[in-house]
Image 1 (cartoon, one colour):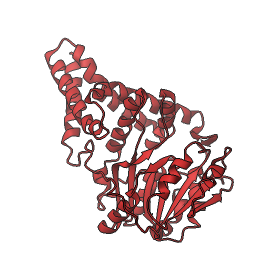
Image 2 (cartoon, helix red, strand yellow):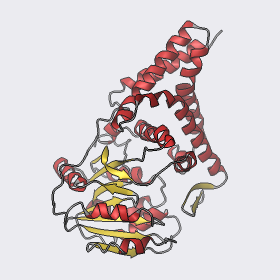
Image 3 (spheres, rainbow, N blue to C red):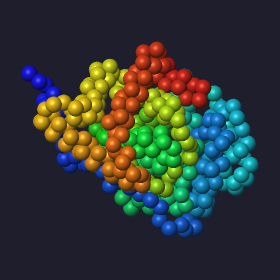
Length: 374
């Protein structure tokens, strides 16, 4: 019996089911951008910026942060940099900037969380902004975030930064990074306080109530996690807190990912972690992604009407689901034609991550290697 029509039908059902999910994980409904710039009093906010070897980017981040308004505090935690990161920051002469020299990494902590925990000890304001050293904020977005938090009674709000999408590899792979993240962590579900099993945040830009951060045990409660942003959101939601995550054009990643190798390493660092280091889930993920992304293309070349029909329809639905993400980032819809290839590339990155785990390495970042034992 020819199984190709059956496999094509399964692919068709997969993409139809995805499109019909009531929480629409492929949509871009959850979004927030800055209101017109004003000179706003932000004296209730302290920004924590962990930085390790960010000499080339840190001034862009701090200058944009300083322009958010008045009276907010900025704490830069120099995470054992080997370059001139602290000197570059100090050269800006920002009156509200404090530079904390980070202590050596202690066991069972990841570098970023250890740096943030040291910075947290200096926070004396009701709100804490967690900002990556490569994220530049557009004017007024911090005030907009704070207003959303207060208006909706939220304890944590987060923005998925607009990634660089200038070069070929960035246009090919970075929109899909957001697309897949939203499929794994549907924003609509994560933003519902009664849905505890989905919690998402984007670590590049998080505004959280300092009281809540203290109550959950600071960053120590998630000290060894690699996907720390979602772990933080989960910790807040598990204690009854309300969280919100959305897309934005007003928080921009200034770090370029011009080559396939740099994007591959970025994804590889945490891809297998997403699966809980489970080879059973890896096998299931491989089966699903092969069926979802390879079958719609392969089925078009089979001499069976139903194979071609179901595969072609599945391919159309796949491209349709990707369309909102491409439009949000103002990219041509033609990039959706490459989604089958992109899906298989991300699967290969996940397998690379799993192989690294077998070799005893969970992740590596800027000279630090986190082993399976840590």
